[in-house]
Length: 230
Image (cartoon, helix red, strand yellow):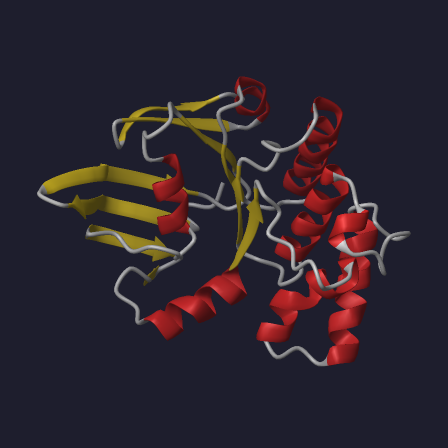
């Protein structure tokens, strides 16, 4: 394990103001994430799992504290700089897939490359490579509505990988899938982890927790436990 964390949350608090009420979604969070780890973030509904993933994904900023990606504090960056960080260093996998319905499989995978200004021919080659890696080589010209849920999530994973991200962030990636498709997606995540990818996954599924190397349990916006499985 690398001594320098790939990502760190330092004394992070995230507060939402709801009328006269102040809600601490995250409170006094201090966590280090290292390259190559496979981490599950777990806990009951409303415990702060999604808020933590949003902070880690530069989709939201801490109210207090700092968030480091490598040695860079990204919590104080302007929106444009944050957007660039998201595009270059992070890959997202969503429960609801978030595919663009008008685009084909290959075009959906190319979306992050388009925003990075990758030339069309190179973008197409990269997208085909990742489509093949997730078993979609026969579906390149299909649109999302022509695919099963499991196939749509494979598109989502290929899209997340296309920019060769530092960290893959997954939000309940099997939540909308039947058990067999969910198992296939988890096998694919295991394969990616075996290739050295860093995966941080929000889940409520104990089976997923057991498969990951490390489980961070949140309760009421705080870290209740941080345990290594193996």
